[in-house]
Length: 345
Image (cartoon, rainbow, N blue to C red; front, side, top):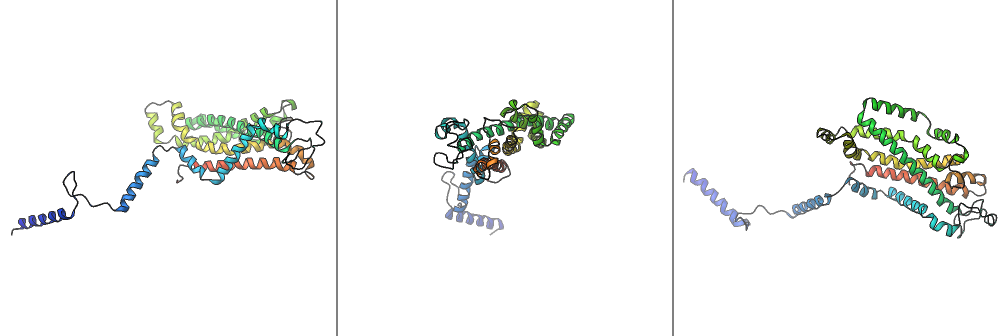
């Protein structure tokens, strides 16, 4: 037998062996490939499911999913939602259950003065016979209004100046950053006191407090957003947008800002607590919200004279300030982790 015939005989034997033991493909009439192991099949199916689950996922959807896993941030969010809801709906139920917390009833003021906690007055009453719980709820309305409004003003100014500074650089960046340094050189709380002290007592109120805190809080937001813009604008998709002729406004609002805003959101959430604390300090000093408007800081001022005999007059508004500030801090910390794209699900 020649060498060629020997090789041909071997190939014929191998083909016969395959045809005997292999499964034929009914469509092609050819031997099928090796059977898929059950474990590999499960891995393949899991991979398909995982790919299907990622379809339609967004940055904000992933952030919410991660935020829900942060127990402390979730508890803080629930507390803030409850407090905001109570403050918004206070006019509907507080007066019916506890009386008007802002009005002094001369007929019952003395008899209801400094009552201990009871079913009718869960936290007792103040020196004028007004229910403490009702006053705390109305005080939440003022404090949250100041905190949110002041931070919105600071964020708006900070985003505008930070975007101009980071996007254009050069002389624009230098001028804005030097102005920022000037504002940061002044002590924040002392600057607020100086502004409000120059106003007559009749002009003081929630409006001037919001403006003073908001107009002095923008430098930190401007610096933070400037740094974020400087980092994002170096990405390839920004260069691609510029190459196809996109305008500066389109580059900023469609490409840079959505990817640079996350640190500002985190810092703004934490800053709300700081603004509430500043408002309480100003009201405690008599420069913030004035009577008959209710403020937690003003409640502490009114109750400090009787702190030895009735500590609840100071304890309850102080506790509300602490809980609110800590809640915004925990929520901001949770948002920081949730918006971090490097975090694993």
